[in-house]
Image (cartoon, rainbow, N blue to C red):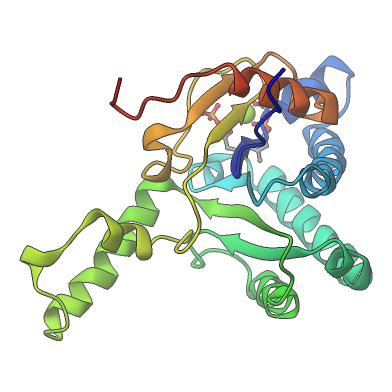
Length: 238
Ligand code: IPE
Ligand code: IPE
Ligand code: MG
């Protein structure tokens, strides 16, 4: 049998925390707490199996529509994770995790932004794999942000609009310099991308499952990778 290819970049939409909690008579924030545990486990496992980039969708630009108590419990959970990660800094560096927080900064509490910046700075020389955490992320807003930067370059005379290429757009996204996701995983039984990696997912393989995120295990990630290995990626060719 051929050796299995591990996708270089995997994107994961961590969905289903609320339904998982409801099934157990727990609060939605208990569901998010359980989801955060799984996130840490899958993040470590991704490094162990040789994934080069993993992007976790944690909070979308649309998630601000949720009740304020839920939004603030999510921000608290991000804070808790960041402080915990700071305590485990040496261990995470040992694992080779280079952290990136991708998303629109406006709207995120200042203290959280500082924690994100510190974590990126402290892990910038780690070289085993890149871990992107998408918070206040929207694929369309990311493209708007890129267009604004390109507009500034046109205004200053640095760029001629006639010369704009796809690579120029890619280079101004939050994921600049990273490969596009080979595989995007969405648990929870929904069949949509919900504004995740809109530009980057043009040729991603998609994998859906009914599992709710807090129930997701490393074995499920392996199953998704096994299925990915059966796909024939043609990119428009034959
Ligand atoms: C995903 O779980 C977590 C976030 C979007 C922050 P949900 O909270 O969307 O869970 P469901 O979809 O209600 O089950
Ligand atoms: C997508 O899940 C966003 C995250 C997992 C962070 P949602 O639960 O917000 O998506 P919809 O609303 O079902 O499309
Ligand atoms: Mg959901």
